[in-house]
Structures are given as C-alpha cells and as structure tokens.
Length: 230
Image (tube, rainbow, N blue to C red; front, side, top):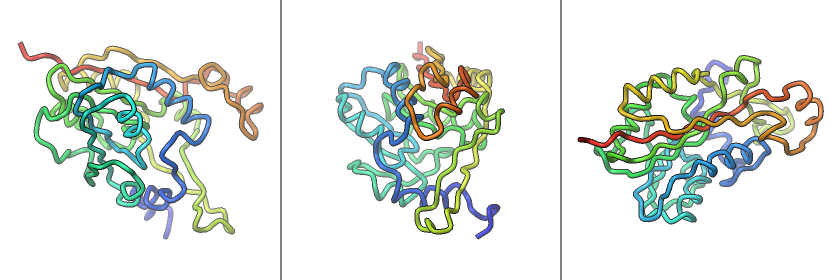
C-alpha cells in the first residue's frame, strides 16, 4: 500500500494493537496533565469521549464520576480495544446523536483530523446541552510549522521498521476561536504545553530535542462552554 493510499483510518486500525488506553509517552502525559488542569465537573454528567481511541479519557471520565459515558471513534480496531460499555463507530463530522444529549464532550488530540474545523465545532455544539462544556486538545500549529509530525512504527512490520505519519490539519488558535463563536460556544480557557516548560520528561534524544525546541508550544488545550438559551 502506498503512502497516498494509507489513510488515517488505516493508520489507526494498524496502530490499535500497540496503542495502550493510557498516556504512553512524555508528550501524551504532558497533554493529559494540561487537560486535567482544565477538567470540568463531570459528576453525574452525560459525557461523550469523542474520537476516543482505546479509551484513555473514557477512563478519566469514569474515575471523575460521569454518570453515562459514550465513546465514539471511526476506527473499529481502536473501539475494539476500548473498555467503554457504550461504544459507537461514527464520523466526528456527522455525529450520530440527537441534539443536546451530552453535558460534556471530551476530545484528545483528534480535532486536527477534522477536514473542516467549523463543521466539527458545530456538530459538537449541536449535541451539547445548553451550558455544557467542551474540553479538547490539539497539536499546536507552531509545532506543525516546524515540520514536527505525528508518526508511529508499524508493529506488524517491525523488521522493516516502516513508519507511518498521520495526516493533520494545523488549525491556528484564531481558527479555533472563530469556529467556537460561530457554533454558539464561548472559549473559557486556552492553555499551551511548551517544550522544556510543561513538557520536561526525559526520553532517548531528549537533551537535543529540548535544547533545539525550548519553549515551542507543541500542544494546545481549549475549554469552551455552550451558551445558555435565554
């Protein structure tokens, strides 16, 4: 299969068996700390884990008291590895849910796969109840501008060490704010995870990485609230 034929769906299906349901590298651990710093009150809430992967944020939602957790992903292999009791395969651009059925939507490092940010945000807003909270993270556009990509080694082809890069749309922070406004959401917080500041954990080659990219924003965390109907 050529690189052009290897879609994000193929990539995540391939990645699923080696993708644990917890933050498994320094970047993801720093991203999750950033998300937890902005974590909304979810006790008793109806929650959507959007683009859930193998379920790391579903586990956090359960641990923090969400009453009902629905996990959606487009990859059947990722969903197969999730322990969520309510798993739905679906497209995050056309959510298969009625309006206002969730109090909280959580999405980790997935919105960059949306081909149209405003449509994604509009769909999230549609399924949120008035006053509901959206909390999500994305790879920072400043990091994308340097050429940093998200990739993984195909574990099924370890001998050849074939690396796949997952495609990503580098939306600017102003794009996120504009999409929120047009979707009836109010941005409450924008937080950056920066190299050598919030991201400090060591890894092979980290000394060179931290020296080269010190203070570069690599992940952004955004919390927004759906406006109340007056």
